[in-house]
Length: 212
Ligand code: GRF
Image (cartoon, rainbow, N blue to C red; front, top):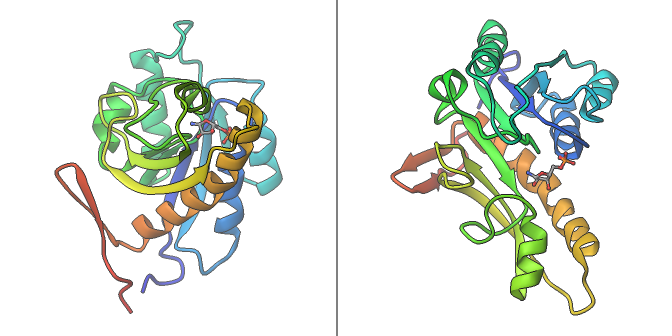
């Protein structure tokens, strides 16, 4: 068992609404949860995630990641890495962070950085996973929490949760059904990692039984 005061320090990177960030912050309010959210970083000064940080008393920073959509400058990568390092961050959670992480931040946190994606990977990578699933015509979709590597939504899979795609779904209704599962999956994945129960072996992730 982890000891009180020994909770894993987590940073969240988010660009928008921040509902997954909020789910993590809520989970971490419980003192028996093995992780604590110490930092929010956003690339977007308008992000609702900043309000969430304020509400939960979590330190937050806006970092200019450059004007190239979906990408980040080497300086911003270095800046976010140092914000994390200075606070002893042990795990970085991407939660709707609309930039592909590369450079210093990825080098420093590879194997200690995870992402949530609104589809059952390896299907429907990239933007609009829910819309892609609807257009393809799958009968089930869901969400995936995975480690971040150099690719886009390609790292080893930690947790997936499945939802049905219903006949009368549109992008909005399917996204809402998936989002509910995201808010369960993300805190659960962070818990497993913070409890030291997650091992990566090649592409496969193994979850150890709870140690007591
Ligand atoms: C979620 O659907 C997540 O899976 C994707 O971006 C969205 C972020 O939503 N990566 P929110 O900002 O957490 O509400």
